[in-house]
Image (cartoon, rainbow over all chains, first blue to last red):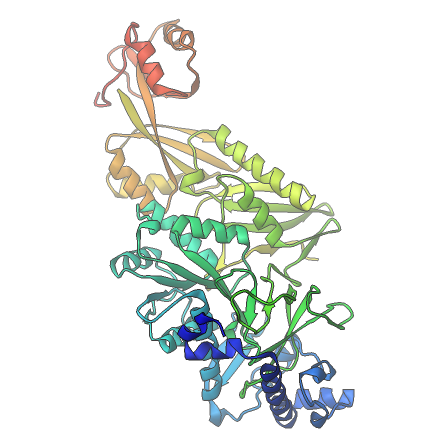
Length: 439
Length: 140
């Protein structure tokens, strides 16, 4: 054991389990969850029967790929409570996704599920370097969205002081951040960029505040965005990953290495599959992340297809954690759009945009079709730092952005500069792609 | 003396020019003169305001992107060749005029023009020994 283990928080012990002990724990939990899912959820029983798989044939994690895959539409088809494995009597919390199209995704929790959730958020915050004594501004939206309350109970479990400010009212966020001497912040990366912009507008330099560390997630963001945030606020910025269907945030989190996110795989078992053939892929191969919840009571997920494209690290992490790492999720398979036969991910455009000196972090991609020809417009909000009184300077910036994007994706785009705070957001999450092509 | 010019980013759509003007109006701020540079999708509204510090605060609090730059106001004789004479002094000193616009009022029989030079300090130096009058305030 390394000397660091002496100072290890008790909750983090599960991050460092020896390989065999971890596999045994996972296998034992998997047997239980499969049995519970089969006995209490019609959809799982029907699917397993169709595949000819009985719960007693799943002896351990080596058998996980024998289980049926679950997709988001299964949750919509069984809306609202069809995926529950617990009676409502045992459910103590309900959340729901924003559901921009159709019915929302429902998430249910027993007390034991909430305890697991607080535990994995706590372990995430510990690996970011949060500690007791921190004043933590939680600017994730409180309410049906899993971000606010999920993170909240993790901060309380840590014993730090939580400031449950929720999203919005950016001037008040900045005032309290400064007046209270906030040391850590949790929100979406795009909302934090807004806080940064607004602070600059009103003459507050976040680099001069005690703010030290940030926990950012609920939407994909790039390393270019991380560098920008870290430099502008003089903090360390960490990525947290999760999804409502599995539990909310706290499925995986970065450590001090900032090189991949450790999956809390004692509770959430990760697999990578080929999204086309659905065949499991070995560690190291890129594909779609599939997660099985090993300890969820109210709403177990068997082999849930996240649509997130990533791979599992093969090398062990210098931080000493034995739970496996996934690469940062830079894109979702359903975020990808195809324009004139070219596959484009918003993250490619973000990286190109942030690579331009003086460029602008708030953007939205608008897809339109004129006379059977697809057109990409990238809208970017102008910031005080990039704004000039000279048209020539602004047009030069616009041209640079356009060329950088064309260089990256191989397609010409038109770049439109827009006023600040005008691009659409939902629950603090940036809406990156608006497709008006009616395909 | 140099003047402070505020520039505001506005989208080229109905209502977007009115919004910053309304914000200033609500705060009781009077515009002395202005110019609008336009492109297909956006414009840059440039404002000369006596209390520019307060105007900047008002605009920023309302969420506008504001840029501050120094410009120079010059008296230009209101007769043929008046502007040409002024520009000759500037150009002889190899100073570039980025853009210019006028005050709506005259000062006696002279027009007053706002110049955005690439180098306002060099321009002031070049103008120092010329016949051109540099305004030291906008109270006229």
